[in-house]
Length: 211
Image 1: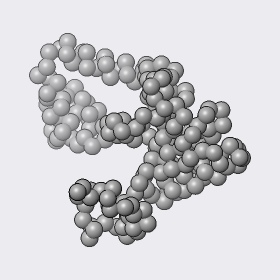
Image 2: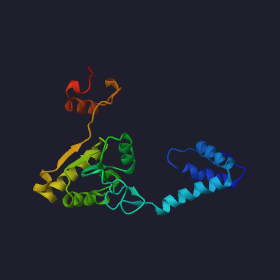
Image 3: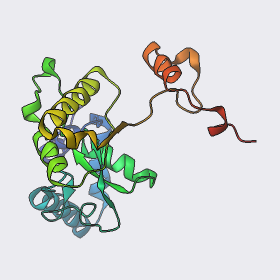
Image 4: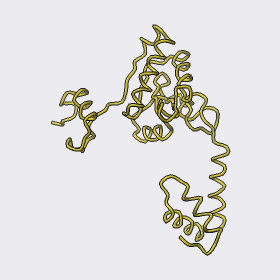
C-alpha cells in the first residue's frame, strides 16, 4: 500500500495496530477522520487520551471504574453477597448486557495457563479469597469459558477457598453457568465435550417447551 503522505501512512499504521483492524479498514477510518471538522477530531483524540490516563480499576472487583470503586460495587441495589467470577472486563460487559444478573463481579484478569506462563499469582485470585473471607458472600458464580484452562482455574480457586475458609466455605453456594448446546444450534456441529455436558446437565423438558 503506497502513500503520498507520511502523516497519513503513520496514522494508518497506528490504527492497524488495533485488534481486528487491517490496513484497508485502517485507511478507511483515517480518511473518514480527514473529512471531519478539526474540532471533532481533536475531541475524539482527547477523549481517548483522557480515558487511557484517568481510568482506574475497582479496588474491590478489578472492573474498570472512574474512581476507586466501580459503579456496580457502589450500587446499593445490587446483591453484594453474590459474586460472579469472570476472566476479563469484556465478560462483565457481556453479562451486564443481558440485564439478568443483579450481583457483583470479580475480574480475574485471565485464567491459569502454564503453557502461556500464567500462574495463579498473576491473577486476582488472592483478592477473591480475601473478599469471600471478609464479606458475607452467599454465592460464588463461575462464569469462565468452558476450556481446560477455565476448569483448572475453577478447581484451583475451589481448593484455595476450602483451605482458607474452612467451615465458612461450606456455607457458600458455588455454581457455574450452564453449559451445553446453544438454542438454535445443531447437534451434528457440536463438539463431543459440549454434547456430553449437555447430556449431563439435562433439565426437565417443561422448563423449555412451551405448552
